Image (cartoon, rainbow, N blue to C red; front, side, top):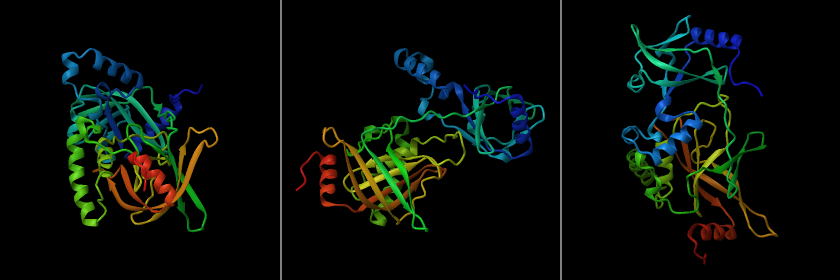
Length: 325
């Protein structure tokens, strides 16, 4: 099995790269956000079973966000020490804590764990002997619903991207406020007030239900380094009913344009022995695009524009549990 750790020569190349260029970094505290999956799972068990005083007052895992440092805010010394210049206040709060530092080297995602220390020149991070490649676990895609979204290219060839329902978001059901985690409800509400006002002015609000998952997604979005920078990933589906569908992405790979029309192939697995899957082909138009404050997460609200009557009936009955007349 190939090691995720860089070799000595690779580490020296990366160190020189950091010294020579203004490389943006992302810093995340390890103690609170438990970036290592095993530690995260164990802490969640402890949090639910043994609520000590420290656990009661520490921030919720979902409220810990990575902090981005611009290239001009760092200086890397030959000794492998990163000095921080005018770092954000959030980073200053990480002082004396263990942190995970992530960055891209020739589009390859790398990270190392270290401690944020105070030195005469300010705050500093010592680059350890081990620098590792970022690895991504393959997501288990739900089998209940998927969409293939087609782009129309100038050369008249069609390209498509796969889209899957995002875990924790209920499709073909009415969103309710209690679905929104308590720690992000205020931020979600701020987004909701802004977006509903915008949608009403544009005449695209409808009943506004589709905006609840949009605002929740943007409020709880956390920047995440990829194993390979700029790689296109499947789109997430965070809402669907018999009139609209909402796609979301944590990268710039969405490439959906407001007002543009796209073809969709929807797939619904069926339990009938004779028919294992129902597919429907329709088109949709992007009613509105929304993004978070950092412009790094996006959501596209799309309204169906061309759909067969039997498919409308199927989607309506799936959404409402009522017969379509």
